[in-house]
Structures are given as structure tokens and as C-alpha cells.
Image (cartoon, rainbow, N blue to C red):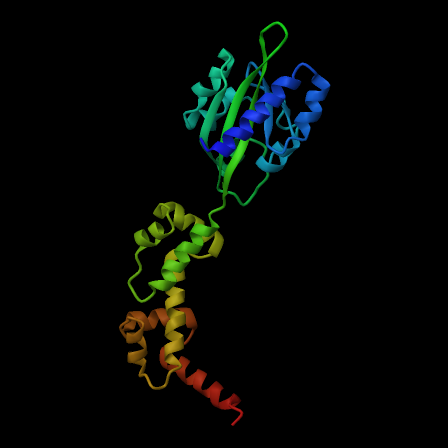
Amino acid sequence: MNNRFTDVQRSLETTLKINFKEKQLLAKVFEFFPYPIQIFSVDGTARLINKATLDMIGIKSIDSHVGKYNVFKDPIVLGLGFMEQVKRVLDGETVYLTDFIAPYQNMRQYFNLEDRDIQTISSDITCFPLINSNGLIEYFVAIFIFKEIYRGKKEIDWGKQYIETNWQKPFDADKTAQAACLSKVHFTKLFKKYIGVTPHEYYVNYKVGKLKEKLLDTNLSIAQAFSACNLDYSGHSARIFREKVGVSPSDYRKLQNNDFIKYDPS
């Protein structure tokens, strides 16, 4: 575990344990912690959350979570394989969960969370028991240290950069997704969400844009303009151009040249 995260978690654990005997002081310390913290009863039901939990995780309200959410019934904790580790806290252990990566949209399916532009939340979680004066576990605590909130935008930028760098080559969905460090299905879904078109559509549009630039060069024949874009001046390529631009390549050149002559100050 990263040393910085470990130090923060152990410091918070010590502070909460010291203040547990003074409930009013504990409540004040708890509320102003800058990290999401939840306190659970031994049956797993959430009993207390702080403001950072609302703000950072996106829980809409205290009432929608406290008394309703039960960590031992959380399908995400179960699905990620952490349930048995979490339950060890009932044996008096302090449990460290590293790289807890939760898909945010899955969390929204089960909990009353805000609709945020987030794909996954990666965090380290410390769970430890709070022992009462009789030596019994009365509650247990979970402290979340967020490591990364993944929105997917930087990966989309990597994919766009790959397309724009390799626009003269045939489109390769697998290599484009690899450049974004995502699976092809996930990348295509995110790309459409953020850009509004699929990666292939973006590639075609970008290539048509480059072809339009070449068609403005009257030193090139239309066929040479297509060739400069690694396209054959065939019925298929010309048809794609017409679908995207609304006119044929030759008509596009004529229109642009006429506009140039019309507005040429000389």
C-alpha cells in the first residue's frame, strides 16, 4: 500500500478510536474529517456518514443512506470479492482494502447517488472496529482514501490523437482502443458518449476534412487529391464524400473556387 495512504489511514484510525469514548467529541471530529467515513453497526447497517461522504461519493442525502444501506448486502463489495475481508472486522481485525475499483454507474443502480460524469472510483479502504468499555465491538468504521476518479476523458483524447495521427491508414478499431488503453467495447461506448459519434465515424469525418483541404489545391487533380489521402477516386469514396459534404468532389472544388474568386480583394 502506498505509504502516504497508509499514514493517513492509520492516523484517522487512531483519532477515531481515541475519541470513541467521548461521543460528542467524536461527532465533531468525525464531521470535519476531509475523507469519506462511514460508521456501521455490527449487522452492517450504516449509522453515520460525514459530509465528505456525501460530497465525494455523491450520496444525495443522509436519510437515503443511513439506516438503509447495509455493507454486508452490497452487491458491488460482493462482486469485487472483498466481502470476506470486510467481515473480518467483526473478529476485531483492522482490514485494509487496496485498489477497490467501483464502477460508478453500477453504484447508481443500487444506491441513491447523483448522476455524475464518472466511470469508476478507485480507493483504498480501511475498516476497523470500535470497542466499547465492556470490550465488545459496538460499531465498525470504513475510511475511504480516493486514489483516482476516472472519467474516461483522457483515454478518449488518446484515441482521438491516434486517429488523427493515423488518418491516412485504414481504420483499425483494435489498435485505436489499445492506444486509449481500453477494451474495444468500452472505448467505443465512451467515445460515442463524449464525442457524439463512433470512433469509425470520427475517423471518416476527419479523413473527409483532410480531403476537402486537398481539393482546394488546384495543382492537384481530383484523383491526386484522393490519392494524397490514401483514397481511390472510386464510386465508393466519392459517394462517402457526397454523403458527408452534400456535393460531389468536383462540385465542391468548383464551389470553393467560385467563392474564392468572388471574395478575392484583388
